[in-house]
Length: 282
Image 1 (cartoon, helix red, strand yellow):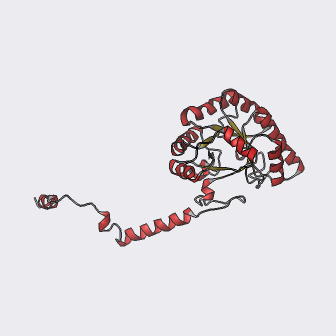
Image 2 (cartoon, rainbow, N blue to C red):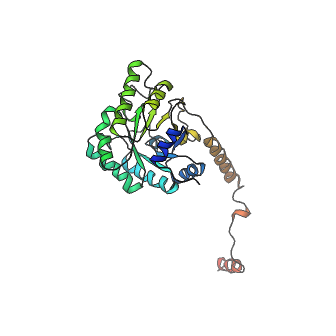
Image 3 (cartoon, one colour):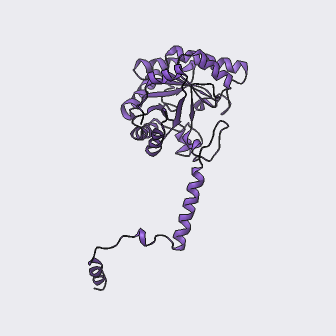
C-alpha cells in the first residue's frame, strides 16, 4: 500500500504532470476498495443524497448525514486523502456557520479537507475556513446546490460570457487561498485554461482530459446508481445487474425449497440430538 498523500504531494503531482485520481465514497466497504485500488483522493460528496438515500437531488442532505458517512469512509480508508463535502445550509448563511461546519468535519470525521461550492460569492467563507486552519477545495462550473439559479443541471462556460464567469470564479478562489479546485461540467478548453493559469491542482468532473486529475461518482463507475447516467460518466462495472441477478436466484431457490441445503445447516453436538428427541416426546 502506498503512503497517504497530503496537499504537498498533490501539488507535486500537478507540477510533475502526474494525473490525480479521485472518487466519491459513502461507506466503509467502498472506501476499503478504493484505498486498495490506489485512489489518491476520496470525496464524501453530498451526492450521497441520491446515491444512498434516494433523494431527487443534493438539497435535502444534512451535515449530520455527511459527518456519519465521512466517519465510515475514514475508517475504511485511513491512508487516503479524504475530502468532506459541505452540504447546502452548512455555510451559506455566514462565515461563522461555515467555520463551525468545517471544524465539525475535522473533529468528528478526521477528514483532510472540505469542499464547498461557488466562486466569487464564497470568497469570504473560504478565507474564514482557511483562517480556522482547515484546508479547502473549491468547486465551480456546474454547482448542483445552486442549480436552480443556473437553469438546472446544465453545463457551464459554453458561451464566452459564461466562460469568463467560470474563469473569474477560479481566479477568485485561488486568490482566496484554496488548495484544490474542482471544475464541473465545463468545456475542455475552459478547464485547460484554468489548469494552466492556476498553480493549484485543478480537477475535473465532466471537464475533459486536460486537467490535473479526474473525479467521478463511484455509484456511476460501478453501475449501482440507475436513475440516470451523466454524459461524462464511463461505467466500469454493472454491479446493479449482477446484484439483481443474484438476488433473483435467491428468491427462486427459497420459493423452490432449494435453499438452505444440508451444508448450510448447523447440527447438534454428538449425543445431544438424542436428548432433544426425548425432550420433544415428553
